Length: 316
Image (cartoon, rainbow, N blue to C red; front, side):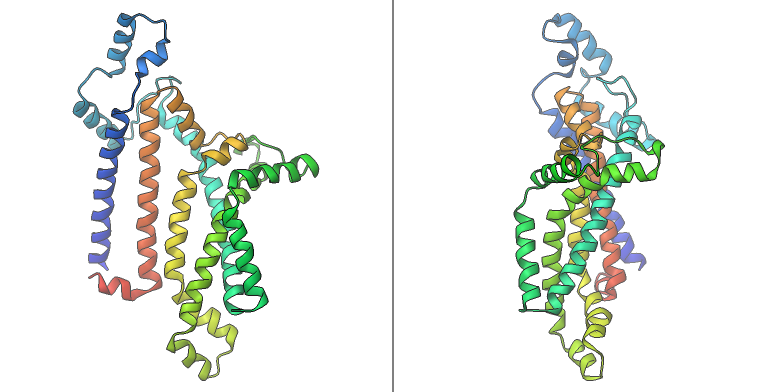
């Protein structure tokens, strides 16, 4: 186990290091001048140059990269050019919306997809299977922002059960916060659950054809016990893989739905910072999202070993 974990940790650190270089280099080659944007188009070249010097934008790129990495190691993310606020405070404030939204969407995705996938696999080539596959295909085809607008029209405008947007803040209580995130989470979960349901069905059908399932049935195990007690766990490796990728995508890709529901999440912060050329915020936010994706994949690797010990043994 120690060798398996060590290899994964080395991969984790190397990936984060490579991601930091890519993020820094890509943002360095973007056109535009942050100092010019902050000063306005009518500012004199001398004033722009002075602001660039105060912000440290005139220093060599390798020096700025090392300062940035050193700050990350110390937990110092710097100060936003546009907001004049520590970046760490901005990010933590927005993560209080984005992370709960992604978690809630992932829980809805898993609940819907696993139930639908198992139901379809247990009724292979029957009406229930065909119906689930048809609905899932429709779910894949629906853009989540369009579905979000439909949810607003139905539950906010017509039924008035939920607000059309905004976030009250967790200080107002758990229920108001969850209620504000319910429709955005459902909008995100529709496409993801449709994809995951098809993966679950396919993985289960493959496992149900294995010899050990037929042996369990021959020994007297009911179809339900063979499905839930033997087949499902062995089918979870591809399902967990897709769930990890989906959760990472939910963390990094909520900007459209956040904009539709006017949620003050991390996606909207990145969008606003790009418009303001606030590169220090963009750089740290993108690096944070990349780190989240890498860590989620690391956790998925560990879950592989817990679900199927053969994968761990083959890697030692």
